Length: 313
Image (cartoon, rainbow, N blue to C red; front, side):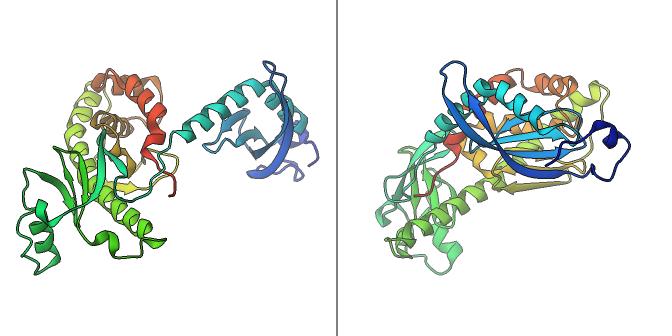
């Protein structure tokens, strides 16, 4: 791509369009601390922005954002100057990726829920009361896990047993599909459905709990917040939560695996965005008024986030 003249850009010359442009390039990186050199590809996004920035993606890829007018060699020089930082971040990401649990979705596999580890087991009829009530799916579920002192968080034949920390799946569910290839896939689907159901119960409860606190504190700071318009639970790849200008809150269902205090931090964080749709000092002041230890909670999420994901079996 030819280098662009900033004067022509300023005058709106047609050879230098202001639209966002994407390209892939490569640069030689050499870390000063070890002398290793390598050819690294990077994804370049040009736009009307004024600054130059580098982002290391979750997969370790280098993503560069640059102004439309900036010459290519200037971009390469900037990346080379940041070689040590780039390679350090890539090592950190590689280490985090290695922390991801690899699940088999078979008997004995372990899963997190609200910071506690539960072992997957396919339940026995001897554990439950009322197995004779099999008239409907609802009745079957009620009968299968009728002892509410022992079993909780029941959904579609899956429940938690707190005393022994068991993640119990109703007998027979694991054999609804072949246990060679499709069996674990079926179990994974049912477990993800269970997590999603729990998230749809927990997040609205937490939003209702913390919204009045955020509203009162924001009001005392001279900032009124609008109502929550909608709460959505999603399987997001790069975000734990988000808030729109319309008051729509989105949360990642995987947060139900984290300790309750971490989930609460994300809920409060997004509620505070109802007052400030940015990460300004005023925003963090509002967060601090409710969670003085928000930095520790954020650090936990950054360090342990990979534990809330899982690799394919």
